[in-house]
Length: 68
Length: 190
Image (cartoon, rainbow over all chains, first blue to last red; front, side):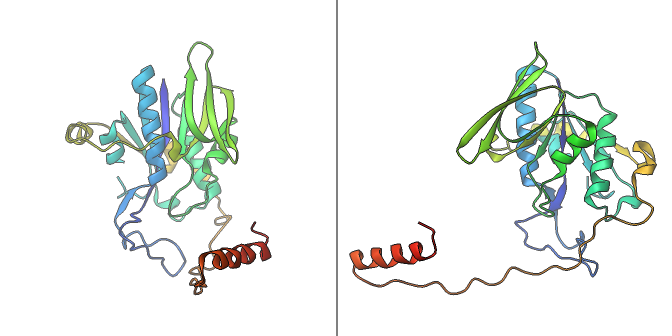
């Protein structure tokens, strides 16, 4: 089966360095980036489904160019 | 995304475009749904929300945009290939609801599904050769960005108020229990 998993790069909560710009948008340069924690649970579930049923997991992200 | 590949994903799709910088949630959802339409899939999985925006609406909104069923707050996922349906245990206040839908379907995943694996060295090495396809706005649909500016914007951000000092009850146990119980009862907590 084909499983799409949406993931989002977010500021690393462990770094505690989140900062907003003057327009209240996230200053992405201020903090290291990680895969959103809850998305990893979705990804793990997808990987287990594919291991049991065959197929592949594809991750889909909308993110700034440097966020790979 | 490289980490997702190291955990075991086969490939990635990275939608990126300068025009999407600061995109609001409606636009983000339209773009994600348009990109998803370009890939045949049985299931589309998301986390229940993100730790930065915490909007928590993307799964439901993408499902609506795609015209697909949404199975929310999933604690287990069981696909049935022969009937092309999927059964999900949905977390509820009292336990689980068991819900079912035809595939393809969108599922919002909770931590009850089980902890994510660590990326192995082998996985990290393998991820290097896996493809991350980059898509521009033109690739998924250039008309997805509103011409009149974003529909939503953040007007103000405040830190949560500092927690006021608590009340410490220092009495013999029986009296203290009564004080605490009265305190809770006054506030209709018990």
